[in-house]
Amino acid sequence: MYATPNSPLPACVKLRLIGVLDPDLLVAFRSAEREVGRAGRVIVLVDVCDLTVRNEADVAAIVEVIRRARAENRDVRLDRRTPAWRHAAVKHLSTVPVADEQLRSSVRRTIILAHSGATKSSTFGQ
Image (cartoon, rainbow, N blue to C red):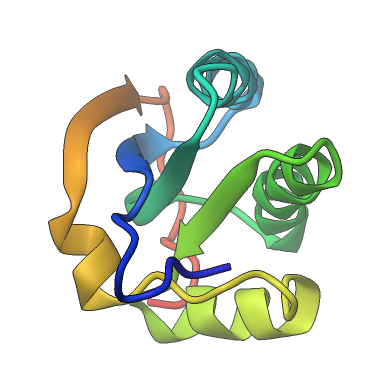
């Protein structure tokens, strides 16, 4: 839900995932999302532009974290700037509001979660 023109946007924190998605990075993402989401009136923007996923199961894992957070009334949104992630969002997160330029420009804090795997497969959608 977007703020009305007269009310300020809630604080926005970006969780930027970088590197190869593996179980450790997924656990770190879940933990960081919960911790930031507990802060109250905050929007968590998940940036996956630099995330390497190996297959659809990896995409589904990210989507499931976002879906669970929203089911628990936390405002978590996927920054879907790449075609592959836009497709994943339309397919799995159609009710989640879009992260627009206004929201991206309101980010007050960025938390970077990075992991470099021993082997690197192709990047999803590239």
